[in-house]
Length: 373
Image (cartoon, rainbow, N blue to C red; front, side, top):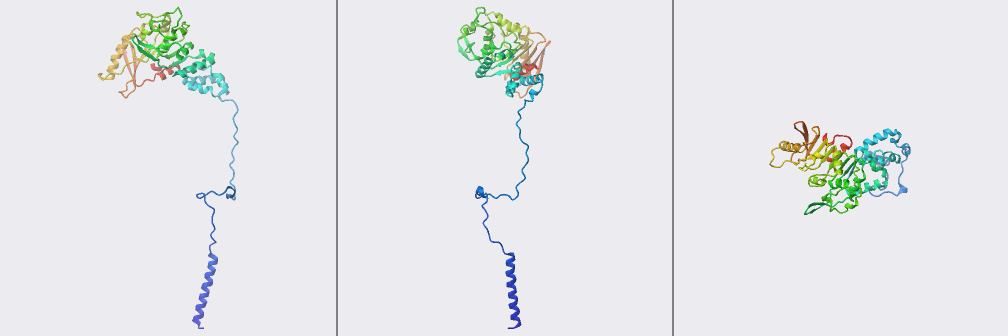
């Protein structure tokens, strides 16, 4: 064997020996099947791998249910009533929410705060529920001071004109007659009329009501709403003759008593020629609507000036310091402003824009100026 052949074999053996050693050192471990991931299927509950080191549990303070008294009841009674009176004067929903806070707070404000609440009844079901509530708690009746009953009267057309279908037994009339200590009232003309007239022989039933059904169900004709000072007529339909006793415009003592004690009057309609302004001897605040200008009118200001002059003539018997506000719902003019008009010593405020009669009424119930602000 030559020397070259020996060297070649030796080199070949070394290469195989080195290669096998490298394979042993860098040999990959056998491939094992990993457990299925969450994208395939979940492992059985008893085979879920647990971490070797459990996480440190988060320390939470124990939750202790508060069973002590309400924070409001910790205050003196005078302060609680003062806070509750402001809340109840905002809306009847605030009054109801306070009644549900606790039993003690319910007993505290149910009677002492109701006279701050502007009670608003929008439908017959609300009126009937309120009447049932007053029946369950009779002591609440004399504490109702501000009442808004917005139920349009049902009418039928006859040859003689409009006939009122809602008689004195309607829920609105029953509630209004029951609450004799109200100071501010908002209702329709039929409700107001049925509240003040009865079937007693001492009171003559007006001709317009002589044919009304259920008229005899009203037995007490004594005028009891002696504290009523502010009236808002929602539906009058330009029918002031509804209150007259005869064709000469005479009224009964009951109606006269009502008209002479009013200090604030709001009409949700323009003032008519038959408005009995001279019968409102104590009136200091008056408000009514005016029609928007027609297409032939030049400007809104011109129309307001003409209407204002006519209103001043109709309201001339009122005291010169009486505050008069007219509202006009002008949809063609995108503005909301106040126009001051004067006619001699008397000033008149005209509000242009969408009227907010209930908000103004509620503001008056809280002691604000309302529509006369």
